[in-house]
Image (cartoon, rainbow, N blue to C red):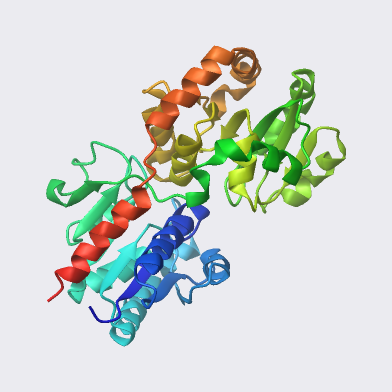
Amino acid sequence: MSKPKFILSGGGTGGHIYPAIAIANELKSRFPEAEFLFVGASDKMEMQKVPQAGYNIEGLWIAGLQRKVTLQNMLFPLKLMSSLWKSRKIIRRFQPDVVIGTGGFASGPLLQAANSMNIPTVIQEQNSYPGITNKLLSKKANAICVAYENLERFFPKEKIVFTGNPVRQDLLEVEAKRNEGISYFNLNPNQKTLLVLGGSLGARRVNQLIAKELDFLSECGVQVFWQCGKLYFDEYQHFNERENVQVVAFIDRMDLIYATADVVISRAGASSVSELCLVGKPVIFIPSPNVAEDHQTKNAKAIVEKNGAVLLRESELDEHFETTFSKLLHDENWQKELGQNIKKLAKPNATKDIVEQIIKLIKTKP
């Protein structure tokens, strides 16, 4: 086989970027001589995160549709035409064997252009409820790698492959890293640790909740490791002055912080859910209600239905957070049960299985 070439597109949030990088890394380990190009939205975080991971990226002038009438919406047709034109230009120049989309604004025009040019395409759908872009792209995609069952109502059944979501491989063995994590993050080994995850950009309502409940959490005797997101760090960093509280914008060693956590509070973005399945910790999910088709609530419900996590909606926090958290913290059997059940839903070989689908397409390429 001559040197294979891959274009990957995923962005807007870490939930779309990191799966794309995980797939690229696995492809690189199989084909060390392969060439890679990422395509993203020119003003989004992928423009920083992808080069940090060692890959080239080109940006498209694209954004999503807002829910109300805005200037952005009026510009949307123009941005879409511009992005389709530039995507075709990039594909013509780079000549990829396969184009892979993991979601986000830029993957729409890129995969649409690839489909129209008869380049094989793979969609990696992270959520239990797909967005409109992937539903439209699925008609011409060669394979659709999904993380949840029962997606036949959205995608052509014969193209669906149930792989799970790509996750960082360093999360596979977190149990053995507890002591290393405690010393790395300077935590007290004799106290229980609550890990709060707000996603790469942050979660306003989760941050407000933790700020309000710090006295209660202190009374519970837990130490709080709180990832508030880069948009909110300035607002909440003063809480670092409190004993047993650490506030960070971003966590550089997710494997070590997961190893130390006794209870996790998290949004229910697809990547976070997949990681939490892998590490098998008791979780309280607080889904964001502000995402397309409310897919975070659907992601969380898919776990809760298997008795693998606790779900609290934002509207329930004031009334139920303290009793729910206190009950979970003091019931070790419940913690163990949730941890074991969520771990059963993990798909540790997801990245390898997705790459197998991509390799099939290179082999069948005319």
